[in-house]
Image (tube, rainbow, N blue to C red; front, top):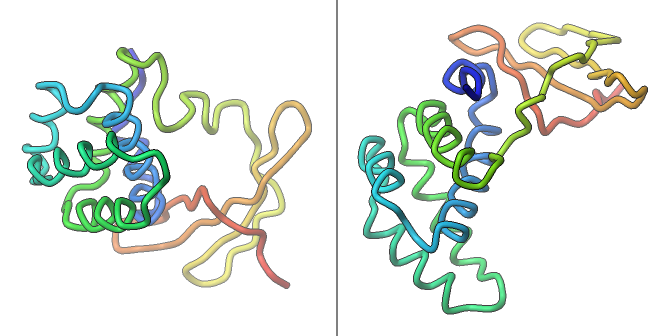
Length: 158
């Protein structure tokens, strides 16, 4: 129904998946009024400490200003997850029907062209060209599983 989120998140660089997960957790915790049963089951399946998430949510709901401590706690929780792509895929699949959207665009990479590709050993840079004429940089990194996409990339420095 929403695509193969497992495969999608597995082609992304883990640093980007952690960044997306950070956003996914914030969206789930703030728009679902905490954790529903399915969200809790997903977290437990991926060894995310639900009690710590609940404390974090209570703390968030009692504050108006963003707290750097919240961000640090959330990043530490995500860093402990061994299958970040699997967790991201499950949260994406869970959130979309509830919120009508997810942490990433479901049209990402569709109708795009890769241009000006430069490969240097274990890294590559290019531009994603969009149908309406604009473009943005994309980076690729090679790891033990092959090439991964870095969505949050800067253009290659000459």
